[in-house]
Structure formats: C-alpha cells, structure tokens
Image (cartoon, rainbow, N blue to C red; front, side):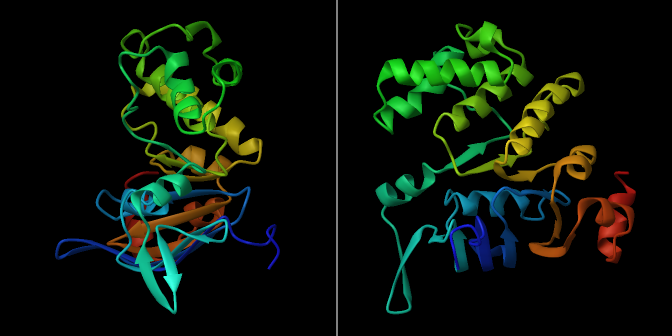
Length: 257
C-alpha cells in the first residue's frame, strides 16, 4: 500500500478499560488522509477516550491503533506488543496536534510565547524562526493583534484559537479536537468553528469530537456515532443525520436536531 493510500488513522478492535470498567469495546475505524471525521454521541460513550488513545495519552489495552502506518504507543516483536518508553511515545505525539475542551494555555506566557514554546523546546527550532511561524499562525486564526496578550486578557474563544495555533506550530500530520467549543459562550463558538473550517479546507486530516451538528454536516467527510464504547453507526454526515439507520442513533439525534 502506497503512503497516499495508507489511512491516516486505522483503529483495529481497540479496547480500553479504566480498572474494571470497559470504556472502549472493540473500536474499528479508518480516517483517510485529508479527511475530517466527526465523532458524536452521548456523554460517556467513549469519544474523548478514543481520541486520547489515538494520541497515546490513554494506553490501549487491546487491539491496535496506527497513525500514518505507524503503530501507536507500542512496538511489535515476534507478534507480541511492548509498550513504548515515554520518550518514544512523546516523539510519536509530536506529529499529532490536540486541542482540548479547556485551553490549557500557560497563564504566565503571552499568546505568542504559548505558540513558540513547543517548537523551541521540543523541535529545537531557532527562536527567530519560531516567532515568524507563530506570527503567521496567529494571523491565520485571526489574532495577530493579540500576540502580546496573556490568556487572562483573552476571551474563551480567543484562547481556544491560540490553542489551535499552538498545535499547528508543531506542523502536525493529524489534528484532534476534543469538544473544542463546548466550554465557550455561544457567541464565541463561531470564530473557533471558522478557523476549523478553514483548516479542513486546507486539507488537514482532522478528528473532531463535537456536539455542533451544523459543523459536522457541513465540514465532515465521515460522521461516527458512538454509544456505550462501540461504533453504532457511521457514514456520510448528511445521510446519517437525515436518515439514521440505527434506533439508538435516531433516539440520540431526536434530542439534538
């Protein structure tokens, strides 16, 4: 399989438990490169845990997860899996950007300083090059005039856009968004979704856990409905939202649409 045909994300019967509580019960899913996949479902269905497994922030208990053809979090020898060292897992994670529900910015650093931190510390980029790239990214997310502002001086929507710029500063091949608008006031949601739409249009591969059905319908290439730790239904977003095949999907959407 050529690199162009290799899925950006391939999950093969992924299972994850916390103690004796199973959270993911055999998730199999593909995300093609350049594709936007939105994950929807009720709270506790395993969406965020699955996203965190893709980034190896949570460790898979069974099954396999690949990003761009590379097994995530483990090395395979003679058919057995061995968990990677924290250092090697961190190296893998450099290529995967993640934007969380809560922005996790450094409060004592300006917007610009938040964006340049990882490229300088992790990628050992020269400061001048990191600053130039950060200024471009802040302009891209509509915040070129707020580069010197601290997080406390920014609205929630502005902080989330800084968080997106910060993730993009590492030049990721894959972007993960875990309910990026759910902590925002309604009037601030649009600015963040606009940035995400532009990112999708540029060809970035994205996985998005979201409750924004309008965004999913408009931007996603694949919509995945999860419940109880399994994929209940997946398909074209417009078709799935208009005519869900599974009873559980219909029940969930009837409360949202």
